[in-house]
Amino acid sequence: MKKLFLTGIMMSLLLLGCKKDDETNYAALILGNWVNTHVNNELVLTNNSFAFSYRADGLQTSASGLVIDENNKTWIENDQYTYSVDGNKIIIDGTNTLGSLFHMEFHIQSVDQNNLTYSVDKFLIDNVEYPDNKTYTSKKITEDITSQFVGTWYGKSTTLGSTDDNYHYWDYFADGHYDYYYQDDSGNWVNKPDNEGVFFLYGDLMASNYTNDLLSGGTGKAFECWNFSIEGNTMSWTGLRDNGLTTSYQMEKVAGPPVSSR
Image 1 (tube, one colour):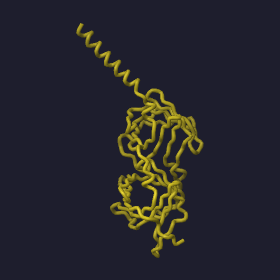
Image 2 (cartoon, rainbow, N blue to C red):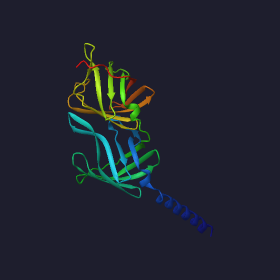
Image 3 (cartoon, helix red, strand yellow):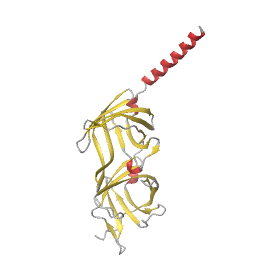
Image 4 (cartoon, one colour):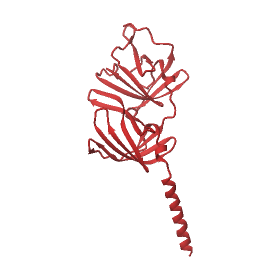
């Protein structure tokens, strides 16, 4: 009798557990904007970060870096995916900006108001499956600090041992483009004419596109991602890079950029 009683308790607890899981509203919990922070519990390289959102109208958007060829890479945003939620599974279909057909199935491992962790059950591009056994963790974006970010900033690299010891100006505009100023050998400030700079903000993650990197001497399109923080008129950038080191910049908000000499 005692054995039957204990078995009954165990079955009741099991049923309650199943009921609680069944009642989890995953579709509601995943709504919003997210930025990937960890892969397999390891911090992602900042340039490998990506952002995405699940909207109430069934649209899934994404943003990430895209390698075009060996000389060109760019940050892109895509809004051509739709999604549905079946229990703890997210099913996504659509095409990317290059026209490739995507089908993705994600298994939600945990989600709350701050973090989403999921694994990949299926990932197909143009009907070809690409296995992925990694676990991804993302944080929810809860604050839009665009108004604090927009403006002119003057500063330099604070990375220990950096070869870039020059000051720079960055002038960010509300429409998403920015101007970059450097000082030439004669001491004149120059608005880099071929910069073609645009930027994207996802909470405290900033991605920027540009061309012809002056420091590396490279050509073609490029992008960089930075985690940033703003306190008053001071902004700091940090980025975890391929060499495992963290690069950083610090700058102050100023009234305006220098008068261009060109």
